[in-house]
Every structure is written in C-alpha cells, then in structure tokens.
Length: 110
Image (cartoon, rainbow, N blue to C red):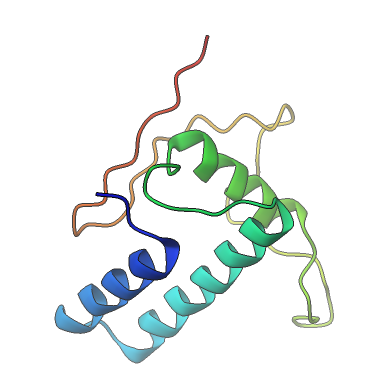
C-alpha cells in the first residue's frame, strides 16, 4: 500500500498525539513536514512511501543543510546543523524513520 506525503504526515502526527508527545515536539514535526514539502516542491517530487529510501532522506538532509531559510532566524538565513555533511556530501549515517512502521528502503549502490 502506497501512502501519500499527506497521509504519512497525518499518521505520524496522530502517532505523536496518541503517545503523549508535547505540543512543542508536535510543532517541530509540523515544521519538518513543511520543510519536506518545500524540498519536494523545489525538486519537483511527489513523495510517497514507494519513493522513500535512504538516498532520498540523505538528499533531503543535504538540501536542509545547504538551502537558505525563507525568513531570518536570529539574524541569519543560513540553517544551522548539529552535524555537518562530509566534504563530498556523502552522509553514511543509517536512516531511521517513523516508529509506527513506515519502512525505508535502502538505496542500492551500483
């Protein structure tokens, strides 16, 4: 079964609510989905569960680190990152998503 990005967001936010997460945590994830939609729009992607794999998540992370903010935060349009990408842009950190069971396919490298 393929889930749209809207359905992924709806289910994940419901999971957060039913597991007693704070309003702040839920607000942070709402912003995450806004960013994910901005990434999808800029890259002309229609994200769904069939397309979610480690390569897409890494591309999203790279986009987050390298793209400017729409509005200044603390006087800057540059995003901060707790973990910078390696110089070659290849992030090999394992990807974990959605504790409610969304599986992420690992991209195969040829």
